[in-house]
Image 1 (cartoon, one colour):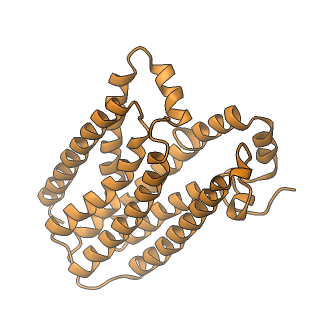
Image 2 (image 1 turned 90 degrees about the horizontal axis):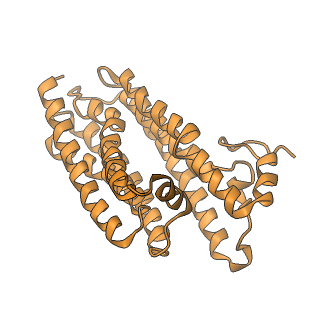
Image 3 (image 1 turned 120 degrees about the horizontal axis):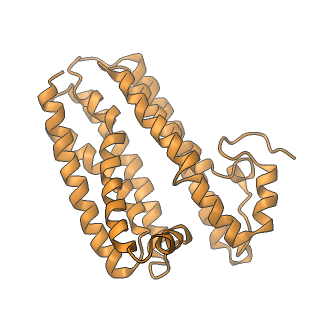
Length: 264
């Protein structure tokens, strides 16, 4: 593996993602809606994949395979978020409203650094991609086939969960209610679970390349963020604020993360 080539790809990706996030911050500042950062955090992964597809020196089939996986998943999630967020663009999501209150009177400045951190996290989480596209070995390994299979399962599961939630919210009769249909009947966050599973798939894929074990950093970070930082804690706090006792009852009967048997 050519370390110089790796660091060049990392640098190009980092500069690109940070510039994108700076422009997104300007837009968010203008419209007073920081939630748009979620859209471009997702889209930044396909951007990185395109950079790697064009500039990385690895085996073409492997490079095309991993980059296609990243592009498909990133565009799917980013577009799903864009449809949801832009539909109420004048109303900032509750968790960002809460941050705006906590960060006052310097909220906009802190949001700028928050957006930049999101761009940096894009590159850090892309470790499995960098490792895979640098591998010149001219045949695929069992790890890469297994990683692809797990990726397909995860993207399918996340898509189903997102569509079930969107359909539930679209029904005006469900306004103020907690979604407990389909996968949401068993887990409060099936979308987050399958998102994490997708990063496990990227790690498994990277195991077919030199130093692939370093790819475990990505699913480990994603799991920590989802369970302890910006994912589940913030989402559940907002659900408790907006749905109160109904969400407490839902918490008592469902798994927090992994879709499993309903408690009762």
